[in-house]
Length: 525
Image 1 (cartoon, rainbow, N blue to C red):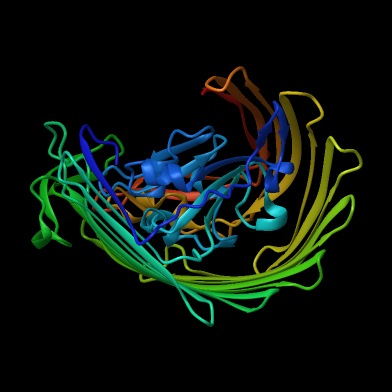
Image 2: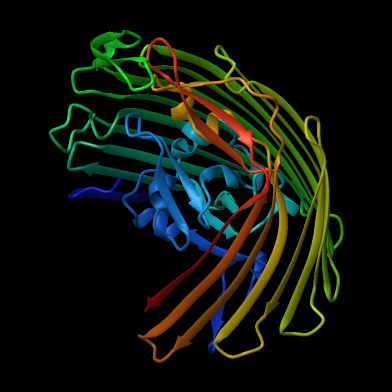
């Protein structure tokens, strides 16, 4: 929420502690040492401290403006948005929660802003092809929302913020350990509300009215010193209403013609006097995980998640009732050898979407296998090679290799290069929901679309220098090139329906599409 004036109140109670255990670049004596996923990827992390200090109430606004990250408003009526990475729209970035892909279709359009930030430990923005570990849609990169461990001590947290237009945000959490079992329990809530706001003299309101509420409960239990069991339940609701200033909830689903005319193609176009968009959605997510240290070097982690997203909405006089069920299962093994970090695993995703207008109905079953090795032949070099094989029930077998190299042997400087293959299965709802659900356009039927395939290349350099205890400089420069074959594009036809909606068709293009760019940031401390 970017606002002209805001008041924020932060309250911590019951010996609350904030833990900042980020796997970021460590700067020691001006020598850059990559840690965690930064060993082979370009990663920007937003930690718990920045989340607490930032007045934004959702992840979209929090990440907007970070290097290579942009928020794009898709619908000026109901204010849906997407997160763009490396010049590509949001459908090319995979959004994860604790490493699981929980957002597709309905969730990509309406779910990301509903994620409560009160229990998030950090958000990792991983740029460039990441399909080996994360699979479908991770072409431009990955946004991984990570929850930290439940604190050992009893802790509480409360945040209240108010905006100049009476926008309100309330969130809180409480966690404790039950002794002597050591069971950790954390509960949290969030509530965001805003009225409709008109910032100019036009009939259309600029910001939609919304009410969002979420609840979550997390539990963890160490079965012994090497095995931990976790379980999470998250429930979210949203009510969103936007449109012309004259619209209200009694006009939902109605059609009030104002004027009509005949266009140059001989089609009669009718314009409404009152227009509104109304969305109600409910999301329920269950997660469970099991971590075990088989030996000091061999570790195993199994995670499973089920998410159901229900939506009932009106776009003018057109209604949409939709349901999406998403099941994810991941099991991987990591082995730490002297000069090799090996990772191997299996995954399964079931994505089922249905609606009353059949605009994006599908059932995807995607089992996958992946293997990756990070090799450190010298103290200042990391090399990574990995591949993933997915068996898509619609698009067949899809192979996604990735290669990367990192050099950090120079004082003040680190260099990375990577190349990776990716793929994306098309989802009509998340691609351009405005063209599909509004009264302005109507979707023309077309044959099953091929999956998009891509090659992505990134080159990154980072510099850090400390001049004194109070002054230092850091710089980050990234160049990227992504080439996509079977690119899917909409075609707006010069044909209209009886009620004035323009016909739209989606199709795979011959040849390829590419995007490239150069971005950088300099920070003075």
